[in-house]
Length: 147
Image (cartoon, rainbow, N blue to C red):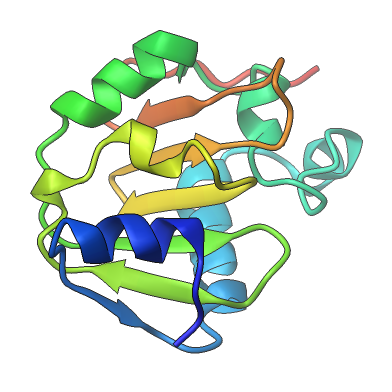
């Protein structure tokens, strides 16, 4: 088992999780398909989406909650089972009883993505203090911009 600050936090609180090996690449691909599908390939290139998926939010391509609003939205979201993965690692895990996790659990993690298993919403904590965290839910009134 890989030891991270996050795994220490969830273990201390008896939150069940499972490491899912090298699912990171797969989950990043599904995340992009589910949340950035309306963005053209050219636009994805312009915003360096493959460098950081969260550029979808920092380049204002969709309306999203940011900073404390994002933390509050995540904390108030109904959470059952979630996937957790990173931008630059294939390490990933599932958290089974995710209702007890909160945004602050991810404060020590950089470029981490939390998503429900249906990919309806996502919470992202970045390595940039000026960017994020972000919370995006597909059911919000979303505006896609090109440019």
